[in-house]
Amino acid sequence: MNGHETFSEDLTRYLLGELSPDERRSLERHLGSCGECRAELEKLRVGEALLTLTSAEAAPPPRARARLMSAIAREPRLAVVHESAHRRGWWIWIPTAATLALAIAVGLLWQENADLREKADKLATLEAQEQLDTQKSKEMVVDLTAKGAMHMNLTEAGMPPQPHGKATYNPKDGGIIFVGTNLVQLPEGSTYQLWIVPVNGGKPIPAGTFKPGPQGTAVVMKHDVQKVRPRMFAVSVEPEKPGQHEPTSPMVLVSSGE
Amino acid sequence: MPRANVTKMEKKISPETRGTTPEADLLQRIRRGDEAAMAELYDRFSAVVFSAALRVLGESSQAEDVLQEVFLQLWRNPSAFDSNRGSLAAWLAVIARHRAIDHLRRRRPETDVEDVVLSVDPGLDNQAARAEAIGRIRVVMASMPDEQRIAVEMAFFEGLTHTEIAEKTGEPLGTIKTRIRSALIAIRKALAS
Image (cartoon, rainbow over all chains, first blue to last red; front, side):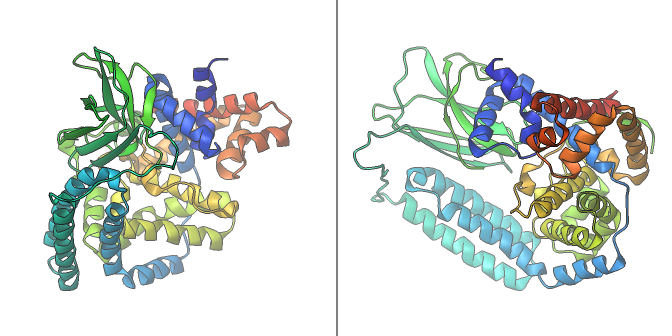
C-alpha cells in the first residue's frame, strides 16, 4: 500500500478527530499536494454534515431560550471587545523574526479597528477603547519600523541555523507577508513558492515566489492573494516558470500552528 | 422550496448572492450586538442544534448545555461562520455534534469552530427544503446493510473511534474504515445527483 492510499483511508479518521497530532500533520502535508484526497475530504465533510442533519428535530425546552438570552444580555459589549482583544493578543506574541510582517499586519489591524469603530459608533465606550488601541498600534508600528530597531533570530545554542519562515495573512483582503530566514540557495531554474492551504480542503493557493538573498533571507509581500480561510501555509521548491498553480514537489517548510 | 434547491448540495455561492440570505443578514446584525437578531436565529436553528446534541448525549439537560455553548460561541464570534458559502443549519449541526462528543468523552473541545467549513447548499437553511433532504438521506441510510449503519451511528453519534468500533464488532479496522467512508459518500451522492 503506498502513502497516498494510507492517507486516503485515514480521511474519515481525520474528519472525526481520531488522528494523533503527528498523523494529522502528515496527512495535512499530504493534502497540500494531493488534489484527489482534498476532493475526497470535501465529499466526506458534506456527507458528515448531511448525516448530522438527520437527527430528528426536537425543540429544546423554552427555558433554554430564556437562559441563552439572559446570558448574552450580560455580555453584549464583551463580545465585541473580546474580538478586538483577541486580535491584539495575536500580533503581540509573534516572534521577532517576523517583525517586518508584524509591522504591516498591525497596519492592517489598524484599518480593521477603524472599520469596527465606524460600525460601533453608538457604543461610546467601545469607541474610546478602539481609539486607544489604534494609538497603541501606531506606537507599535513606529517602534518596529524605526531605523535603529534590531531584529534578531534566536536558535538553540550550538545548533546550526535552520530554514525558517513566518507568514502573516489577512483573509479579509488577501494581503500576505512572508519573511524567510536561513533559506538554502536554489539551483538555477528553481524558485521557492509560497502556498496557502485552505481549511476546506481545496487546492493550495499560490501566494508568491521568491529567492533568498546571499544571507538566506527573503521577503514576500502581496495584496492580491485569493481570500480563503487558511489551514496552513507551506513552501515548496518549484521550476521557475510562470503559471505554477499546483505544488509539484514536497513541501520544504510548513506552518505548525493549527 | 423548489426541489432544484436541494438537488445540488455542494453549490458554491457566487459573489452576486453573497450577504443576501436571511441568515447572512441576521449574522450581520449579531455582529453589531443586536440581541433580537440572536433571538431570531435561535428560534430558527435551536431545534437543529439541540437535536444533534441530544442524539449524541441522549439526555436533555446535557444537550441544553451544548445548545447554550454553541449559540454563545456564535454570539461571541459570529464571524466564525462564513456566510458567503454553505448552510448555517449544517454548520451548526456539525459544531453541536462535535461539542456533544467532547462532552461525552469529557475532553476539551478538539475542533475550533472556525475550522469547520462546509460546502453544503444554503438552501438547507429553509426548513421545508431541509425536511425533504433529510427524508432522502434517511432512505439512503435505510438501504444500507445493518452493520454499515451501525458503524456510522457508533462513529458519529456514540463517539467511538474506528479502532473501538472494530474491537466492539470484531471486524477488521480496514472494514470499518471502508464502511464509514462509503456511507458518507453515498449520503452525499444522494443529494448531489
